[in-house]
Length: 489
Image (cartoon, rainbow, N blue to C red):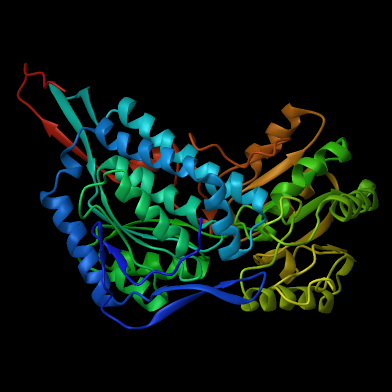
């Protein structure tokens, strides 16, 4: 797929000249060079997009189509993505630096699975349900689309996170204004082109990349019924507050600082081989990354040695467009500066570096940080409490299961986690006591698209994926009838 610039915005299913003249430059984090540019969306552009979405929801065919008909459009988009999977993966790796193998699986194949899942669900989900009331008679519980949705997505897994909102929202019958991160607008525009090819009706989808001020305008917009946001906890709190002022529905998928608990009976070779793809995925730029690794004191040195050996041998730093690369560059210079600041803070607070800690000498150009492993980490250190969003792991010692649980739960976050043990039943007991929205027992699969995903505590509010992800875009209406009448559905 040729990387191209765009001169127009996708508003209400049409390519429309922007109201402003400012441009967003897309920078390749490997070369540090500008590769394309797109219009920088304005409040006036969002007004047009929201108006198109409002008209399409209130008067257009989309909410009134049969759910399976909406599902057919989703399935067509999945087919179109599949036809250009390799090109789309290369586009995203070029945009934001993810290793190509991860882009194939996590950035492109996963969105196809999500689209197909919700396409299937439209045929089986009970949008109408008849219940027998306790006061006599039957009640129709109708599950109706919430309305116009503002979807705000970050740059780290851009296509997947956009589809994670679009698929259930569109399956529900909503119309959507998508505001992708300004760093990664190219895959969002390509997705818009594919929805256009799939026959999505006019007005149902708009794509307007822009910065924070315009995003806040979308959140505040009185014609938007729901906000679905993925991003930082700081931004999520602001969005939740703004939505609360107007009783606007919202879903927040926020940050994480997940703990991987290695029990003393774990097989280290297999456990670490399965754990590391979650700990270092996407160059460490993942909210579900297992960046706190809890090791029993009795095996602490053994765990550290095994981690250092595995990362040194298998986690190759390099060009993200090579299938041999495991760790590519971070998104931007500011992101590299942020990660290097955390590394400096870890050393300042007394942790030691067992591996990495700097920039790879073989890559003087590109926003690279070496995979870094800290030892001697205490759970109250900044590097153990704050989300670094880079390839930095902290190994923390514990004494016994109760101590491990206390450390794992001693966090403002609660998004993901894992336990590694020779006894699955023992692992399940640990899993039930860690306060996170998803958990892995000897598994490399952080969550399944057929099940709810989301966080406890500062990791968010609401759930995405599964039937629960569809219900997040629905309002429930109860309709009562006189005794003896049975509604037909």
